[in-house]
Length: 149
Image (cartoon, rainbow, N blue to C red; front, side, top):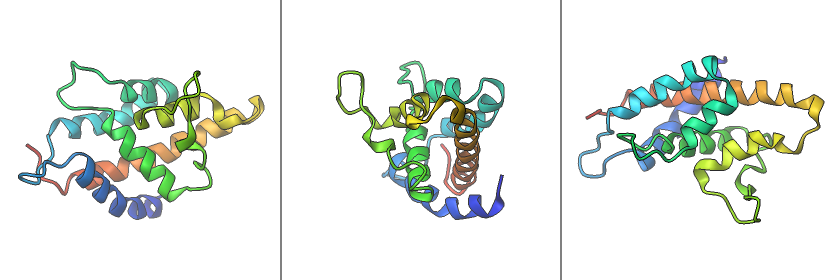
């Protein structure tokens, strides 16, 4: 994990949190999101990349907040910082050729291996996991600057 990368990801993370999670009335962010982003690192370590992406991409009505909003923030961070690596992420289609919801872009992109050969997948998964870890740390740090309610 690179401190320099995380530091460069914090300013766009601040903007994305403001536009995605922040309450426009009082500028606060629901505190449930602090727990969600904190659990991402543990989930990546315990469950792995694909299960974590599936959990965070799901629309679950039992959640207090919409955990999938982090997938939108993280996807936008990955696209903006590593544009060449995640170039095709916003063109993901479902099996019927229709565009996917943005919360599903990263899951679909990774689960389909970005069109790579079988022998290239382990390296691809390692890189995405590292990128996702750095982006989630940046979001976690950026989230600390907001009032949580």
